[in-house]
Length: 368
Image 1 (cartoon, helix red, strand yellow):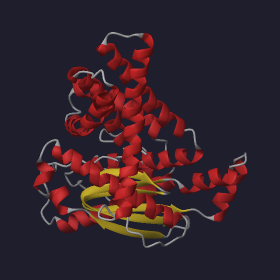
Image 2 (cartoon, rainbow, N blue to C red; image 1 turned 30 degrees about the horizontal axis):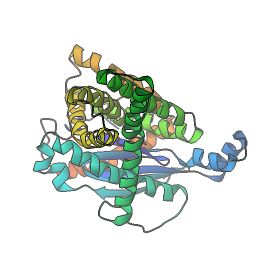
Image 3 (cartoon, one colour; image 1 turned 90 degrees about the vertical axis):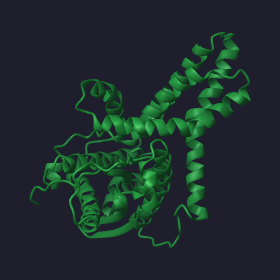
Image 4 (cartoon, rainbow, N blue to C red; image 1 turned 45 degrees about the vertical axis):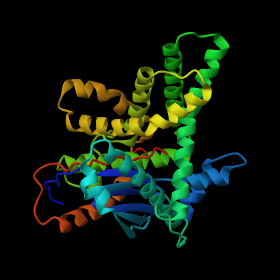
């Protein structure tokens, strides 16, 4: 494929089950690779213990990438033999291309909420593909099933990374007789960061998640190569960096750090109930600020101060990505090419300025 000038707007992505989902502005494209029995047998042979079958099955199935643009999404499945199945998901025009997409802080919350539903649909679809199943279940945000999954996932994340640290820090303060509220907030922040890094590191030791993180790396490399105007071949894509400034991992770390700073500024209620309520109530405003921060830093990476600030975000991505093989890069490329086809078909006139809605591989579960 000859080098081409990239369309001037930001793409997003996510690792899914044996595949990649890319999102543009019109569609989201999900590409997933079907395992064969030889792959499953090989994984079983390398896995020991009473749960070997379960672990091995996940190790083969749980991997992939979702990449989305601001208008559409496509789900693509690649069999081991090279066959490709594609499913395209149209994106909500109001959310991704309408006026709300230009409202600072609000656009982040709306986009992140929709991304949770979109990511859930991509994961479930790619899981069906990996298992060779075809279940006609509506997991869109308009359905009860889709809404329920997103609410449960979001509640678990809030409970683990916000409610639990607040409760533990309150317990530490009570047990030690700590007088300083500022110090208690610092303890809470340390617990948050420890839980975030520890959780990511812990799940990263699982064989199935390692493969998932490999597809996450393929997604980043594919977008980096495209944004650099490089030729989209597996060999070329695999030479590009595995980090990306708009990754969902970067968003999560930014969200946690900003929450520590803002909680120190807003104060710490003495009553445990009010403390937990305040932490939950501030999550969404802080998420809106974090989204704008990621947008700003992604646009100003030529600034040495911004590059310095983003170093921790890029460093943490080494826990959520793995070096992909060429077949993973091929899946990422296939998903992106479907998104690009939709984008170019919808835009007869080339854009001259970046669009205002960068996407992330949220949530972690995606970031990224």
